[in-house]
Image 1 (tube, rainbow, N blue to C red):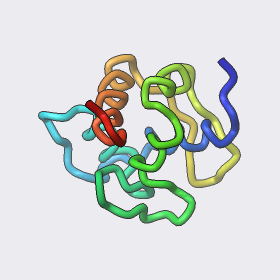
Image 2: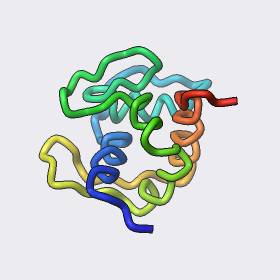
Image 3: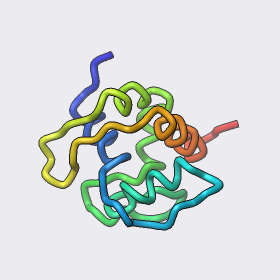
Image 4: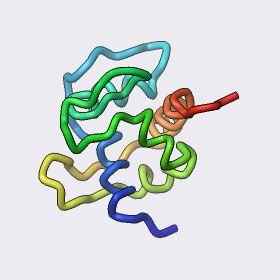
Length: 110
């Protein structure tokens, strides 16, 4: 599967390293991954705003990309030329947890 540059940028933001940002949420490990790595730039919840102007809230990301379509990109690693977003690779358990959490943000989910 070819990943577009914009999808790469969005995916990298989902797991950008920013250790110490946000509190861990033990009952939702996917949200905890996003809180610890992404919340410094992205809105990760249903209503919060993104702190970085170029970082879309994840509730908007899932309108453009079904969460399950992001798994391969998260597993292979995402790189981008954008200086704010570091390269990353998530562990399989983290990928599954993030995908599960993002699914909760998907409009019209069952």
